[in-house]
Length: 136
Image (cartoon, rainbow, N blue to C red; front, side):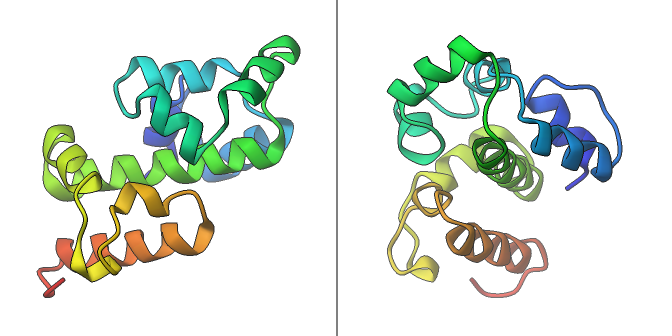
């Protein structure tokens, strides 16, 4: 997944992967959350559960920036949302797949695993297998 696509989804301008690293370290603007929500990638309940609780988001709005850790989590999730859309050809198919339990992930919904790095890796691995036609 191209860093420019991730930056587009979170409302930033395109750039290299290193540019994205700097953005994460500096803390993304809170508006990045709004871009993901308004773009229909996640709903508020999913955002609350996977990326940032509403109360914490409210506090972050006062400072205008996410922490580096929160920014990293947001980018990780957005990267996998975009990768799933790329793998399935469109966002609607990806959204259905992300929210449906799959035996390849122990009966879990892929979206529910994105709250941890290890879960995100499992989802990314499965998407790679699907993209290459390997039985999932």
